[in-house]
Length: 122
Image (cartoon, rainbow, N blue to C red):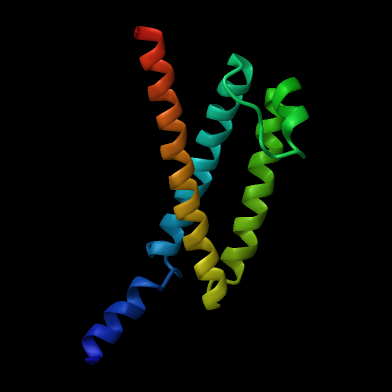
């Protein structure tokens, strides 16, 4: 590997200035988690689905604000732990996996929304 390429790869992973891919992934996961909470509440209250997380299912059905706060707090604390250890490969990998997982979950929610819209207009 050339030294220029090595330096470029090092700068991509440098998140001291909050401009690297890890910071972007963490920010995206926080936003996608909020979107997941909104979609989940929508599906639960319209009867389309139930909350899969046994710890949060009662909150999702009974108290939307508490559900959103608890869900956001849990994911934020997990991301904070990973962020503080971001120099370790496993933590960076965990951030990447959570980013991919939340993107997949968002696409899943969009698919359910498209199906629901298709049934509404059929």
